[in-house]
Image (cartoon, rainbow, N blue to C red; front, side):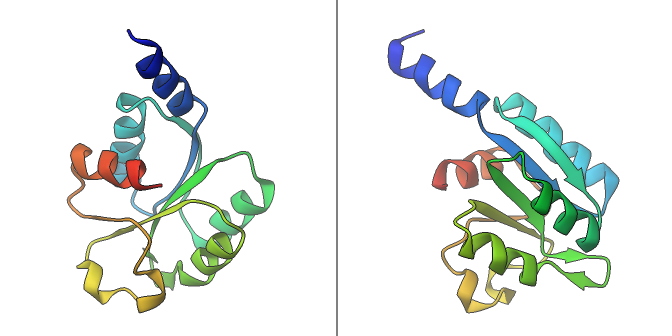
Length: 125
């Protein structure tokens, strides 16, 4: 392994990801992809309230968040994360064009999630 690839691997290992997803199986798929890509899982949240508590507790470097948690939108929490400078990836079962314009610069992964798409979104952060 070259020095630059070793440094890149070390940087990924230090990246702790909070996954916000209300569907357990989908959260597990994202967790597996993160593991394969060399990222650490900082925690998961399945509801807006759990996500808000996890954000308040900290201990993560970036967030991957489903835009719809049951009947609740993640947008208020996404706005707060972006305002605080926390790297964010939005996940959606819809097309990126359905997201509010204020999230135009935020990386988006669309269901069904592919590891290449997750890797590309992480690389944009």
